[in-house]
Length: 508
Image (cartoon, rainbow, N blue to C red; front, side, top):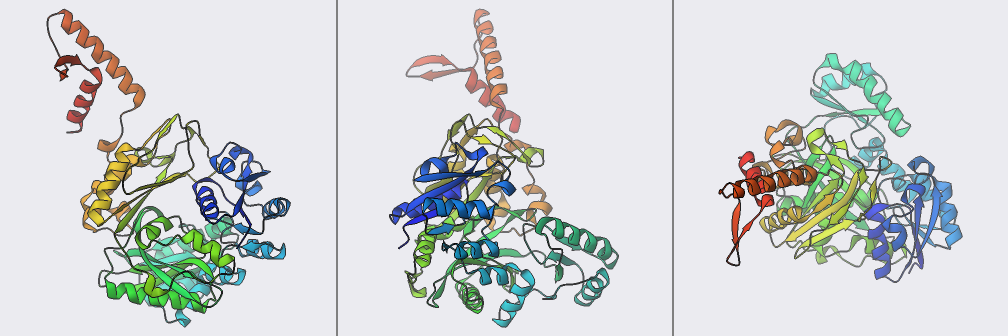
């Protein structure tokens, strides 16, 4: 078993990995930028090393500094978490060259499956259905037009490298091709250092469903069922759940089998995810593979009972998988909300500042993966996601009800968050019925941020409360009475209750 692991990441995922290491008796090493000097992951780890200034390019993306910290600390392995260097083949190679175990797939597998064109070719060879289009790059706008004319519009121009919607354009007619091709290649080059693109048929009203796979170095590979990830805003997932309402047992089995086949074809080792598009008539198509731990892995852990990070550590230690495929039984339902420091009622603008008070939800079926605390500073340097709120229930309804309760309890004072927007999504007919697709947040008016869910500003509420209290006192002096309630047999006046009552009436 590994003795000491350096976590090349920050925030909640760094803490998640540290906890798994502790469960196995493995010592931990954190790295941090100057902006993260007081962060929770630094305090949680057994040791911590400064790796540079706040910008990620000068700290968390510096392979040399992370390798130096690992060697200085005496770590024997590196866990990359997600984001940052987690899908960089050269980072995996640098770890191995430095005598460190990279807790993830081999560099060759990252390189093959990280290149989306090459990944499509491998998936095709493994017998995985592909979205109509090409599995080779389109070199010119004219070539892109010829391909698009042949497969029919609308089409997607997609970057061969990277993800997150960068270097991607929807084209609905041939006269849009030239400008879209130029924009996609430029954006891909700027974002990923490589401007190659390919063409796919745009499938509409489809679900984004991914299969979690895990494989060891002895040739064993299994899948852990699916995650439903269709609730996306501009290709960024907002909410995930497992299992998916779109799959039945037969479709789940078939998708799982081809996902495992694709992983084996790529000689994949450790945890990874195969992403698919699923149509209403239950056809599915390979989209891409993520060669790392996913943000949304907790929902899979809750319905399978498999600790995925612990399995990653065991596999990296040279142990075989702890499970066979027949051991994996899906039980219950889990939902995850990604809580970000953004203002949903102001076009999701980032909300930076100090978290003055953090009130966490609790109780049966609640899991909160977070790294924030009272006094934590949210900056513009890193991803706006500040926590993941996950609920589990015996069925989907119970998981939804527990999430609604947890969202009501969750308070982060001092910044704006997406909590009210998640409350809106959970209450929507589209989500509750399962009638939503990858584009629903852009096309369904009932899923646009609704001002009814905008929280009352604490300062305004305090001012309003004071004004109400003053009014109460004036009316009492004039022989009138408002906002009275009876507590323990005594009449009690509450300006706060009156504010709340008026707010409810205002929202209709």
